[in-house]
Length: 304
Image 1 (cartoon, one colour):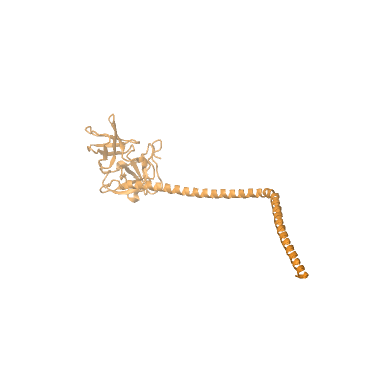
Image 2: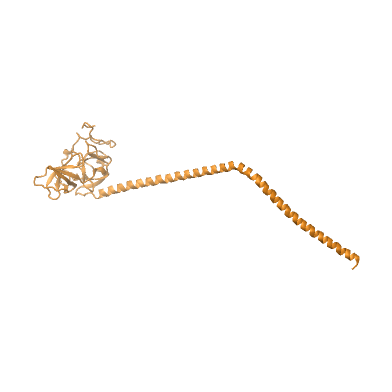
C-alpha cells in the first residue's frame, strides 16, 4: 500500500471518530437540556402554584356560590311544581269525595218509596234543619215544579216531613221532629193507631195509642194514611224507649245529613190541608221572589 493510500485511510478513520464523538455529544447535550427544562418547569410550578391557588380561591368561591344559587332556585322551582301538583290532587280528591257523597245521597233517593198517584221529584236541601224554634228545611224546587202544601218529603230511609210553604223556586218542609208535626201512624206488628209528636230534638213521642197496644222496643212505626195528606206505609221510625208510660221513637231518617230528598207530588185532590197553615210560626216564602230564603221564628217566638 502506498503512503498516500495509508494517509487517506487514516483521515477517514479520524473523520468517522469525530462524527461518532459529535453524535454522542449531541445525544448527551439533548438529554441534559431536557432534564434542565424539566427541572425549570417543576421549579416554576412550585413557585406559581401557591399564587394561582390564592388568586383562584375567590373565583372558586364565586363559582360555588353561583352553583348553590342555581341549586336553590332549582329546588324552589321543583317545590313550587310539587306544591301545585299536590294542590291539584287535593282538589281532585275533594271533588271525588263530593261526587261520592252526592251519588250516595242520590242512590238513597232512588230507593225512596213510590206511592200510587204520587210522582217523586228529586230536590236538594239548601238549608240545614233549624234550631229550637224551627225544625224546617228549604228545598230547591217550588210551585214551578208542581210542588204544593201537603206534599210528603221522603228518602229511602223513610218520612222526612211535609211541605208547608211554597215559593216559585223553593219550598219549606216541616220535619217530623218539629214540635208542630203530628203524624198519624200505626205499629207495624199490630196496626194499632197512634200519633207521633215532634219534640224539636232527636226523638219523637208516640201518643194516643189504645190501652190494648203493647209496643215493643225496636218495633217499626209506619204512617197510617189517616186524613189523606200522607200515604200509608211510609217508615217513620222505631220504638226506642218505653218508660213511665211514655213511648219514645227514633226517627228513621237522620236529619243531620239531609242532602237530596224526594217530594211525592199529587194525590191531594180534595184533601183539606188548612191545618198546615203555620204562618204564625214561620215567615211565609214569597211567591214571586225566589231569592229570599227565610229562617222562621226569632228568639222571642215571633215572625221576623
